[in-house]
Amino acid sequence: MSALFLVMTEASAGITPGTHDLLDPPEDAAQIVSLFDRPAERWLAGHRGIDFASEVGAEIFAPDDGTITYAAPVAGRGVVVIQHPSGLVTSLEPVTATVTRGDHVGRGEVVGVLEEDHWHCADPCLHWGVRFEGEYVNPLDVLAGFGPVRLLPVF
Image 1 (spheres, rainbow, N blue to C red):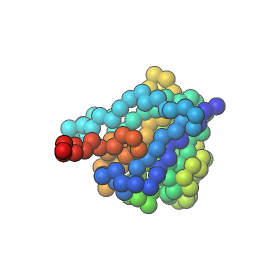
Image 2 (cartoon, rainbow, N blue to C red):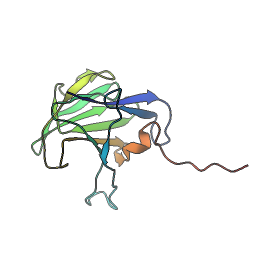
Image 3 (cartoon, rainbow, N blue to C red):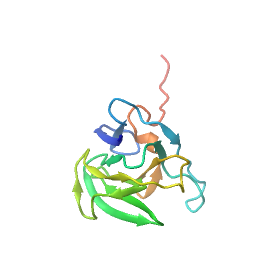
């Protein structure tokens, strides 16, 4: 059984006070199967996160220290939401939670296992959403090694 880790590290990524490293499992990189697609307006359809290939029953870990603000089904699929001290709010789905609202979790602590769910991806995947100051942001912008592009002057 594989595990999917989203691990925060200390550093600045521009839009948030933290950046993130991704490991799945430590000896293998996670495969991104669907990218972020910001809708033109908040109420329009879009894809407010990224999806990682995984397998049903894979353990899902807290990306960083935080407090569980939600751990229950939404529209028939499990969702775990973590408020991090950095101001980021991460959501993970479809996940059968092993934590409850109000729990404090540490980086790398198991928060649940991936559920079987065919609503989103053809094959099992973990959907990871990231919000900052109430707005969904592209999770790749807060992953170490990705981040926002910054043009530097040529000398």
